[in-house]
Length: 637
Image (tube, rainbow, N blue to C red):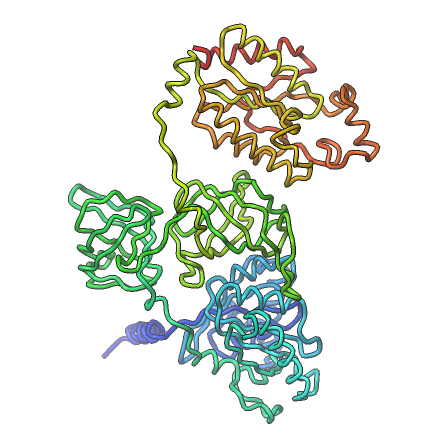
């Protein structure tokens, strides 16, 4: 006779097996504040009887303490718990809920409705197959409804449930529902240039009372469509990832011994079989799949979503970030793109600033141009813009420092999307969708030259360097740089001094002093300094350069060891007291805007190679100190 524990184990195994075989639907709930997202999710969780064990235990405990009052109490407790999570900030990122019914498994991304958290809604929507957009029946279509719908369209979601909630507060009137649906369809048609870009299923409901959430409500006999949960159980999403061309971004190269070399990663799209021909990008070398290896053994084929190690018939140089593609339908590789960018940071996106760009397993340094336009989410009008602020969406050109393997986003979400990361804070500041490669990316090639940088430097008997002087206006940067250049010239060294004021008379005379212009100012000077080091020169750059990010960009543009940051450390009070050019006086009087140290910030260097304090030493002594460092580091021989 079987033991009870064996029967329980058998039941659990059968239960888990039944869930493995169910299809999975990922969806997002979104809308404005207080549209009822928590109540709706609570109702679905409660009705599905798949509440997390800790939530269920809490409900049972509270019910016993208060005296069980049936389903109404249990449901209220669950909704209170979800609302409490929101108050505690748990959903400020994205809260993912997992539940299941007899027909399907679900992952719902529960996102806050506040405008400042639009970026979190976009994060949740980026992996969703369907969006449930809630509208309060009392308020109709709001700005946040339009913003979320625009993002849903942008991210390629093709199935939308328009959940007109709180119908009980409008006496379940059909006219209220019809008017909201008509207004929404009119707006949605603008998203597709006259045609609604997604399938809309409008459902009138009351999440609080359960009307049309799980079962058809008798209170709205005029509605003959599906209830929400039955619709989610049966809706078929567009072409599955399996039907798309094969893509596998390489996460790591597995070589435990000389007899085995495989390329591990998760299959993004498509199917791969032993004997299939694959192309490796960006190298474009082709080979054949020799074996498909997993933890449980070898497979004859693998599909999207599976993590595998592919062994190829040929020895090919492949590393992390490369992408294995279907040979007959490969991805593209380019270093310049047009992209849609959703900005996610309190600090604005500044054209010319360098960010880290990550797409799948690929990482690159990216520079963004001024937006071609940004979008007014209410009217969908294209507006002129020089930058993007928090939650703004714009079309931009992006240039990166190497070739990126990609598919247009609407063809492949995984290889067509990216995030942008601040290089100093490592915070994610933006997300984007790759539209297409710019034609100039394939038309421009690097022209090789016969005389190299080492050859030019050898002729001058010196080591190329960029000496980057940074500090407040009036700190003494230009004075010290000028003295140092004279000392170097007397030693027979080949130099050039790029001074901030001088450059603004020519190369940068079209730039002002906004943050955007300051970034572009430094970007241009960095490119000039890079050319001068290539000529073998010791280049002295004297610019306030107030932002750490741009100074880091300049450092990254040079070869290792070429860049020396020299912080001319002078307190603001001392610099203002000197005020040789009278600029501080004008800034204090409001005659000069965006003046560093007064109404525009200066970010102090954190790891400068050389620090000189002009309060404690003279300009001459500071120049001598820098010269000693250059000699010690071998730049002068």
